[in-house]
Every structure is written in structure tokens, then in C-alpha cells.
Amino acid sequence: MQKRQRRLQHPGAKAVQGDQSGDRRQAIVGGETHACSAMSAQPLSVFISYSHRDEALKQELEDHLTPLRRQGKILPWHDRDLEAGAEWNKEILNAFDAANIILLLISPRFMSSDFCYGKEMQRAMARHRNGDVKVIPIILTPTDWKGAPFAVLKVLPKDGKPVIEWSSHDAAFLDVVKDIRRAVETLAGSPPPQADGWGTPPPQAAPPQVASAQTPSLDSDPERFAKRGQLFKDLASLPGPQFNQLMFMIKPPPGHVPPDSAPQANRVTALLEWADSQLGPGLAQVESLLTQIVGSPRSL
Image 1: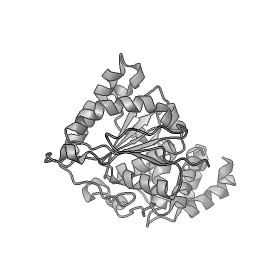
Image 2: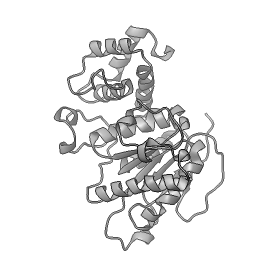
Image 3: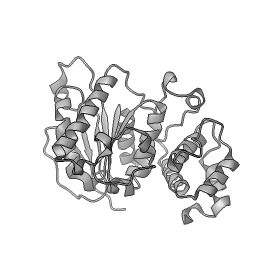
Image 4: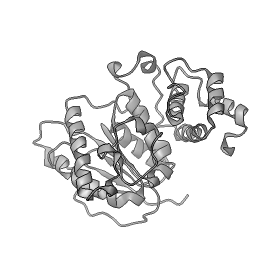
């Protein structure tokens, strides 16, 4: 895999131009401390997950987030053009797990990205279910997102109308930022999430059976993280009857996996969370049962 030099841009510093290939990540997790030294409230951290091919729309959103930054509600720090590797994994996971709010910029490019959809979005939804982060999907362009795990959340802009279909992008992003501002103000009085990999759920926010099955941190185990992402792809593409057969064989305890009426992607995410937790049988057992049903999972 081609490697690129990692470039970090501090607010106010001139961006360095470089290779534009690959997906980009942006974490709003700190910076410009001098501008907010007089602010009494602690700024919240925001993580933006997006495809690099939506860079222009992402930049427009950033422009609309500027008032929140200048008011000391959020403090930006940019981490751009990172490629796979140990340092990259640690940088991204640390920024991700420090976030109070995660913005998912949804487009066909996002949905087709193994990293954006298969890793960041799945991890975001896991932290959301644990109750330690606010996840906000933002529909940039017309996209078939129904049935995706984040479809259970409120999507922006209003009524899920894609940004580019509004009378102007500014009008759409203004609608988006109004909701983000409300989320920031609501969370401002809450303690920050624990940055322990998947986060520790507040007792009042999660069902007892889920709260006792915390997922071990994946920060130091990128191989297991990748395996979990591959299993999600294999299981999500599995025909319904075969997935139900696997569920019958593995028998997760009641309450850990949504019922048959729920979207299969949601059920897969919950199944893998439970299986990879201290109460579950482990990812290897899921993969073994999947192989028994369909042969090599990679052939799906």
C-alpha cells in the first residue's frame, strides 16, 4: 500500500499541499487554546468522518461551524491524509475515542468506503449504543442510506433532504448547524466520555445486560479491529435465512441482538459487539460458524 507523509495542520497554519488520494479523516479535538482561555465552559470535541471526495462539502460545513469554534464551544485540530499503519491507527483511535460528538458525512462515496462505513461508522454506532457519544449523520448527496445502522438516528438536514438539493448549500448547512449547536449546548453540562477504546456506558443509559458486556479496547489490536470489520461485511451480505441460521447456532442472550424485524446491518453490529465482549464467544467462533454455513466467508 502506498504510504503518504502524515501532515498535521494546526489552526492558523498554512496547509501543506500533497497527494489527494485515499479517504481523509478530520478530528475536531483541540487547538486554538488562546482564543478560548477566557471561556468558562469546556469546549466539546467533534470527530468528522467523511470521504475525501466530499472535501468541498466538508469544508463548507467547517465554515458554518466557525461561530461555534470562536465562541469556545468546540476547538478544532486537523489531522489530514493519514494512511494505514501503527501510528495512524493510534492517532485516529485516540481522536475518535476523545470525541463528544461524531459527524458522519453521508454520500455514496462514504457508503462505498470500507474505512468510513466499515470501520468508523460501525465504531461510532457502538459508542452511541454505549451512551458515551452523540452521533449525527449528515446527508450530503442523494444516497441509499435506508437500512444502514445510523438510519435509527435523526439525520440532518431536515427530513433527510440532501444538502445539494436545498435552494443553497448555505441554507442546508445552517439547518444542520442549528441542530449541532443544540447538541453541543445539551452536552455542555455532561462529563466527557471515557476514552477507553469503545467507551464505558453510563449505567443509566444502557440496559443492564449490555452494560455488563463492555467491549475490550481495540487500540492496541488493529488486526482484531480489521477482522471485526471484515466479519461485518460478510454477515451483512449474508442472505437472511442463512443469517438466521447462524443466529440459531450461536444463540446470543435475549436483549443483545435486535429482533428479525430490524435491519440486518443493525443486527450484525449488535451480534459482533456481544460476541467480541467479555460475555461473548469471540469473533473466531462467529467466523467458524459462518464458515460452516457458507464455506469460506471471503467468498461472499
